[in-house]
Image (tube, rainbow, N blue to C red; front, side, top):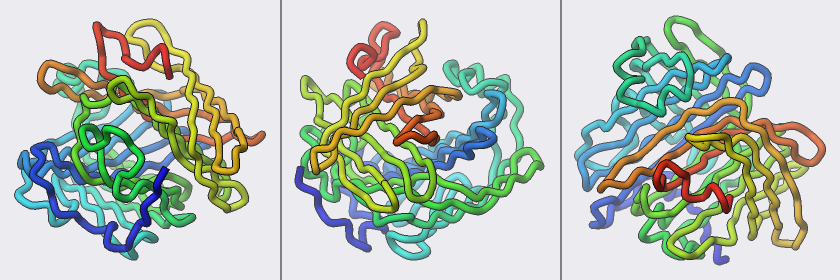
Length: 330
């Protein structure tokens, strides 16, 4: 796989192509291993469609969740700022700041979002504010110009990088403030984002501490299953991964993932295994042209290199007659 270098300029916004679904996206997460509190924040600028997709999602102890979702109007791709959410470049490829000042729907259970209309009309709306600082633990890695992802130009991105981070700051929901000091991942991509393009993808993230963890990516576009990619972090040293195998277990309908096993093959040929169990789930979805793509955003407890880590993992599937497209493969 050809890996393009990530440049400091890539931290900033990119010139949109004329693709109607051009998307510039940034993503941030955080998981507190002790309490189960976690967050997922994303903004995707779809400037050719005139809006930004804005998601601020908090996983709360006991299975509860708070979420703000918006399709906020934008007229340019000059920055990430919409619906009260903003991403600030402090030092390119090293330090970022995330702020939000707005409201969120407070859900009794994260899985209530399987019926978003009902969830948003019956749940209370509460104030939500946050300020988070993301410091890269190691240099970001990724696919840069998209080389090596067959079909990516018709699917999810042609440029991409990601990396593990130390995260600090605070979150205040419904008047209760929580200080944040821990670990998470961040991601930046640009190019077409067609949620219904892939049959499925699996993005598995895990951090044990600042020097130990992994991220794994696998997908199927058309009839082609990618070999997968990612990285392993051991003793503070990164080794890229050029093959990923994911095998998961699922519950009864609506078939959410419950556990997974991942095998990562590093560039040196070493095979490293990890096993995870789901303990919190918030299902998102995207409906377009009669097709539904479901993104089960799950929290996992993961055994890795003889220790226990945590991460937010993304199970993206086209839904076919209520069945996730990748259920029998990944």
